[in-house]
Image 1 (tube, rainbow, N blue to C red):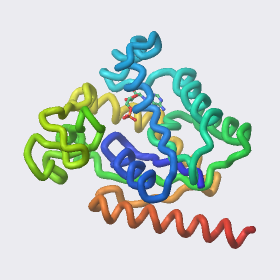
Image 2 (cartoon, helix red, strand yellow; image 1 turned 90 degrees about the vertical axis):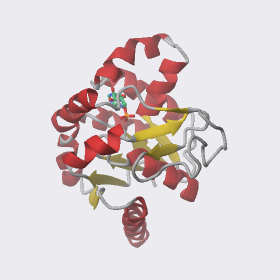
Image 3 (cartoon, rainbow, N blue to C red; image 1 turned 45 degrees about the vertical axis):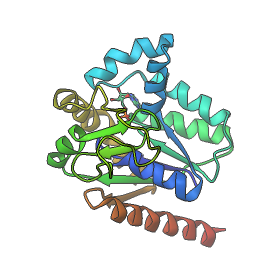
Image 4 (tube, rainbow, N blue to C red; image 1 turned 60 degrees about the vertical axis):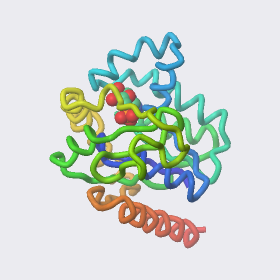
Length: 225
Ligand code: AMP
């Protein structure tokens, strides 16, 4: 099953994608993660996008579509792809349709994680990750059990915050979401693919809502077949 997690920055897309990877063997395709990897390995493209990302603006469609194409053609997808942070524009959504059909796949569901803007600032500014293994934490809801030590890998003193997780960049990121990405809600509704869940609930409750959507969609597929 191939799905898109759609929602503003801080909606919890990355957190839920990782839960789906661990629990269902799906493959997470996060264009944000791919771009950050390109930056930290110092590729030409990584250098070109760094300032754009730090301001919270979108990088060009051409770059992210190229990244997704590379992954789709070189990856069997486990039990399905989770598109996290892609598509973010209508042009990207069109390109995704074409790329999926080129590799003999299709999109099964879009899950819109709806959250209140006022919750996003704290969600974004409080988050940090282990720079060794990438485990995500939050100052309010998910602190390491032992201060300064990663629960997942046991390394100490190696946490960092994303450069764009500050209030200024968040304003730009939210603006980009409402201007360029939120039209995708109507687009996927019209295609009969949209499922909306409450992204403000606890991590476990959101995981349960996503499971509900995936179960319903796979039952639908079984009935059709
Ligand atoms: P994310 O980790 O998904 O929040 O993405 C971080 C940043 O990477 C965004 O603010 C954009 O600058 C860039 N980015 C990630 N995915 C896309 C995309 N699909 N289209 C354009 N820019 C993207």
